[in-house]
Amino acid sequence: MKLNERGLLVVISGPSGVGKGTVRKALFDMPKHNLTYSVSMTTRKMRPGEVNGVDYYFVSKEEFEQKIKDGKLLEHAEFVGNYYGTPLDKVNEQLDKGNEVVLEIEVEGAQQVKNKMPDCVSIFIVPPGKEALYERLRARGTESEEIIQQRIEKANREFKKAYLYDYIVVNDEVSNAADRIMAIIRAEHAKTERSIYKYMELIGEKEN
Ligand code: 5GP
Image (cartoon, rainbow, N blue to C red; front, side, top):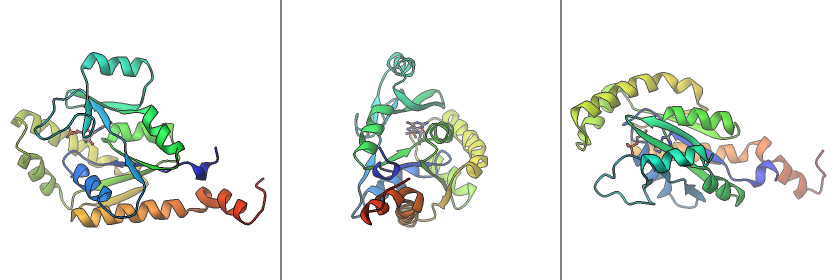
């Protein structure tokens, strides 16, 4: 398959609590796109309001470890005591159909994807300031103080990884952040290296 016929793999990442999930949802609410979301697998407990198969595939530790052994995950990471990972089959299936696939994952997993699929587009979402991030982590109200502290420490380490990404997007307003991501995706699609083969076909020129 030629590069340009496959969909684009978009990796959205950033420190814990930056609002990646909210930005991703706003992105999917935008009109006219063919983005598909890759539902992750996790061993963490379901939060109120979450739906199995929509927010995550909630599985046991044993099931997750079996998936790792069987090579069924594109990437995986341990995050504050739980496993999170991206099912490989579904990603490839959608990319082969020419759909854009969006992953919303933490920093370690994002680097694994970048190494395995260097053609992906990686976006690091940052808060307008560190305090805004700490407030957001506390405001969620579903986790114990110990877990919140662990997430804050994790976020402080994650901040330093921004330089590894193709793009940095500030989440000042959710709709602004989603707009910026959509602009990046559209621009990436038009990149010569992604669209040259199709163009050559269009004008009847054979590729080398
Ligand atoms: P939460 O428990 O708040 O839903 O997610 C915790 C962190 O795990 C978030 O930073 C989220 O983006 C990340 N995450 C969700 N799914 C995946 C995944 O499939 N792989 C990796 N590496 N991280 C994930």
